[in-house]
Image 1 (cartoon, rainbow, N blue to C red):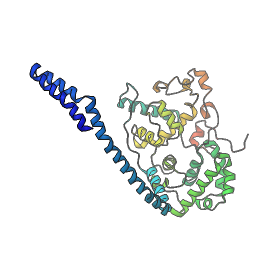
Image 2 (image 1 turned 90 degrees about the vertical axis):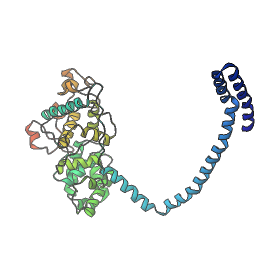
Image 3 (image 1 turned 90 degrees about the horizontal axis):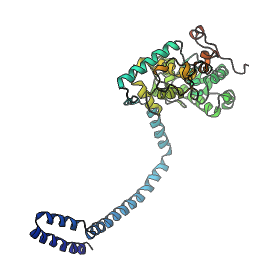
Image 4 (image 1 turned 180 degrees about the vertical axis):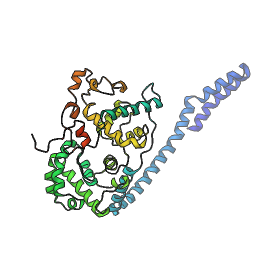
Length: 364
């Protein structure tokens, strides 16, 4: 068929040459291009390509079918090895340092202006919350680690009301590692998801006992290997039990840094990297406290108290919440609104500033 198309195209070429002799070089070029674009030439080209493409596709499919069974057998032969490899990859990913990413400032704001505004917000919040601290009760790194794991999907207050009974009965990793799961579940029931949390705290206690001599490790790469421990939990422990800087990206932190347009990222690891680039590392732990406290007390998810916000002039999202000062004042929570905080045993500095301890579990 390609030969026939070529023969059909030949008269067109002859016509073009004849026209070139009689009308000039430009006419020849035009006629030649028309011949090249003719239906016959296109059909020849398509016909030549189809068999080769179909044959290549068929060969690739046959090769894939031959290889697939071998891979399947390999997976069945070594399930333990595959599972171990997957677990190792997850731990390495959680411990890996987050790559720095470019910070995209709000429209019309230069990167330098964004850094200055972000740091000014942090300074303003430091004056509003000079006594900011982790709102989980703990006496040692082990208690802080367990309490942080339990705080998922519930309030710090609920955890603080629950952990006294847990630590009174199981004060060390060795004790909790050997605990009866049903008894632990009963203690943790008020925290919600108590079965999963029981597995996590018993599992991490066993890991601490077997791999770390009953001590909570002070390195990120070790902490994230423990059951139920991710980067957020690890940084809470590192920053507040060992004094090693870290950014705690919880739900409050994510909401506020996006409202302030410090970043548009939604992934916690990318938020950590973007915000970390705006501040010196030495500020990271206190910055986390300031942002989280502000999110809990004033800049709420559904009804932000914009009219009572001390950083309103610096906030691009001002007006999303109540702007009337009197109405906004009624939305304040915890000590800003005259209510108890979340800790049963808060630091003395918090009490000296007018903060109130939370009531124990079951109190009226």
